[in-house]
Length: 268
Image (cartoon, rainbow, N blue to C red; front, side):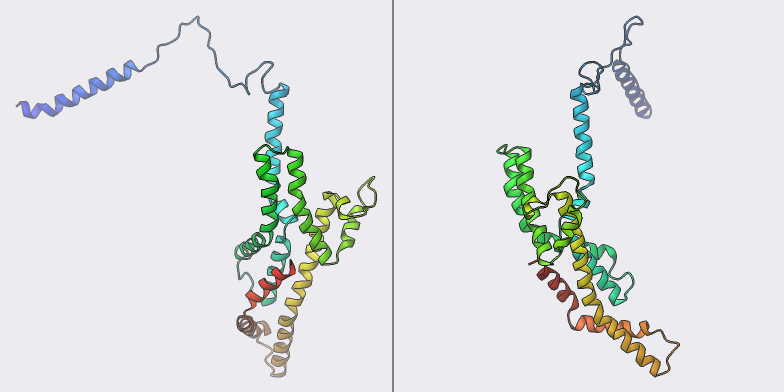
């Protein structure tokens, strides 16, 4: 008989113990006449040192500026590196092959990104060694870190503008800077003019390289179209026949290696 009721008694004993523990953890209600006080953080507290004070407002502005700089990071990657030239050339190559969306845009962008990392790694290493490390070790201030860090990037952009003979792009943007004297060297060119001039130079160079890549495929398309017209095969699209031939030719000459190698040599 005791064996039959033992589980029930244990269950009731457990429920009573749980109820007693819950009752012991209930907070003691505050008296009715005691005022409630809420402890706010220092940054949100009202008063002379609240978020409306100069100190709190300065911290909020710093956070906003940091978020703005982080949002401009992709634009800085596009404007100060070789990414524009590489991705435009690879996109024109895909158009020349006539493969529609193959390779996918994600593959082309990833390949362009890794080529950019390879080309820009020496300049970025100089920025890290000469600006980031001394600044984190409190050996230089922010102004010196900016001046030292931007120098390798400026040298890279100036070298590419000079190599592609696109110096007139710099003068194009210098003419629209108000109250700016004519520069005697690239050291006198501000970033406001150097950055768009470099990007315009990269676009010009990318389209010239793309034209050289596009021309052999265009000739092959014209040859296939003329042959099909001479054979009175007017109902068959020429692109349907030329696409396998272009792919075969591209694979036989190891086209991807040649195009990427040409891009890397263009930055030497």
